[in-house]
Image (tube, rainbow, N blue to C red; front, side, top):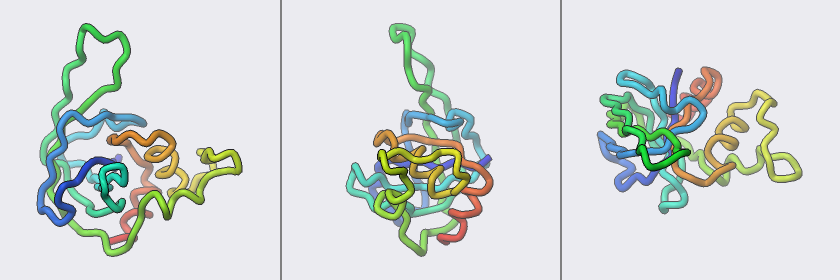
Amino acid sequence: MAFAIKAEVKDPRAETFSFAAQKTMYGGKHVAEGATIFVFASENEGGQGLVARGIVTSSEAIPRRPDLERQTPRVSISVRRTASAARQLGRDELKRFKDWKGFSDWKDGRPETELNFKFYRQATNKIVGISDETAAFLDGFF
């Protein structure tokens, strides 16, 4: 399984990235060393979307807090860049993959819809698991 992360990226051209205590959704908590990950610089933090493909070099689950009944699993990861994005892909390019009510038809099988749903339905930064089809689609941006 491949993964994608949408987070604050201070230097989109960096050779390595470090992301501390990131929320995980849609299988993102299974991210592990050696996994392929696509890095999106969060538009909420001034980024422009897809910036890099990389390999996870370390992954550490953050222990749950006993004082909280409900909490999203969090993971800290380090990523080594393997490629830089050659084409733009972000919120603006993906927003048209919604139905008339503003929600994605998650079951249409399109990689764009999967990314729109997982990243932009809730604007929070997060690590998500992505399908093989979506990973292949994203590979076309490098």
